[in-house]
Length: 557
RNA sequence: CCUCCCGUAGUUCAAUGGAUAGAACAAGAACCUUCUAAGUUCUGGAUGUAGGUUCGAUUCCUACCGGGGGGACCA
Image (cartoon, rainbow, N blue to C red; front, side, top):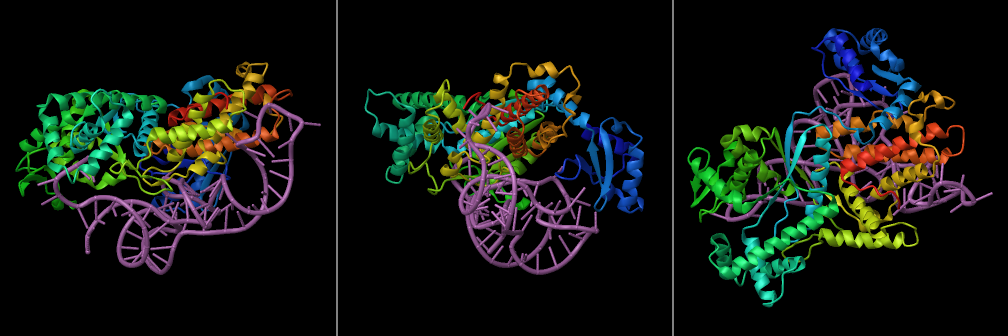
């Protein structure tokens, strides 16, 4: 990329001890700009403008001149680089050549990354919170893959514990002997069990124990079937969401190992306290947490230590990323500190990132009271409204398209924000499909494909020719937006683990494309060949970008 | 009480320490005999308060105010 070339040439001039600087693509001040002069002037006893002038004259003799038309010094000492028209237009050809590979890089070709996300619990609902984790985790997985790393997706599921006992209690109360369990029954059963917990505590605790030791054939049967139904149901959702997992880990597996790890480090890392085994987080400026409860059972904390080890045995990762809701941030701090003492080599490679809560105008949700919005009900409610809107259009597989638009609406609203903050999900706005929304991006893509279908010549035909065929008109804002935009956004999104850089960029491309579309007739004129190439480039950028976000791209809508 | 996160237009969100703080919705005014108007163009409107660091602060530091999460046997 030109950006890297500029950086490299500046480093050649200044030497390796130069202070860090950025080369970025600002809006309205040339095509690329750098703050290098301001960053380094003081060290050299110069003022920023003197240094900038020196750099500009040196750069004037460097290889960037193949691409750069002129350089200007502006403001307090920025250097603005104006690219040559053929550089910008030449990039359109590059986009077409690379096709589905455009936007990717190979900076992490040797790296192995495991990423854990979604983590729904069998016997409970797959609710909108899981939808958020899944959307973010899937997007990040794809973005890391796009930088060349090998990425394995992991899902960690709580198949034992009180929530399961409650659900089984509820199932026994609500099911008659000869019915088979459905996924919908499980959510209801959990709610029944949770509400009955205060009155039937001992009975439910008894069930919990039997789940662990598998001593009761009737409970085993309900448990095995319920778990199977749950997991099948989750797969059905994953298919809708366009996600899949390479590894499934269960609490029933991590618990045994976790307990063992804690016991091995008793007295060194962990301490006994009030009959439980704790990690004294307060000594580290955090808070103290229980790892083994007074009955000797591992808590989630201990299980997580077991999980880290199991993950590493399953896949020798260089980096392990765990995506959760931010309500467990403090807990993860404690856990990672404990891990740094038990498995320092694993802790160094582990990173926890979190997202905010999805808040609905109706208020808070609770699976305990059954007052949840499941992912599926949200998707189908939105799909129905989309169906209504596209009722009189001639589209094949209308139901599928409607669902893809609905999912795009949800995913877009999650991925347009920087992760970590709560999301206020407003049905009305997600459905209005005006302005920045999933449908806005999909619609722009559909427009590109519609034009390409109508065209009688292939835009590939212009590939071999010089992009100068279009020199009769000035370089448009659209062409500038396409120049190296997606690869830059991918690099930034990877570095910050923030897909929203890609979302924002794609929205900008769409805005420019729609404006271009209004002002310029694509088909049937002297510029058609070049403009078609441009349209195809827009289509490639949108398709590749949306795919990285996990947002589907229908061909018609 | 302790601790972590967040305060940006009326609303929902952007902004890798940089230049004139970007969008969208809502409000007002235009544009469909032209490649899908789920679109485009134009007009108003914002960094909680007080300090500090810096050539430069929405961004970093301190205090305060406001909102949310967490604080030993759930995660």
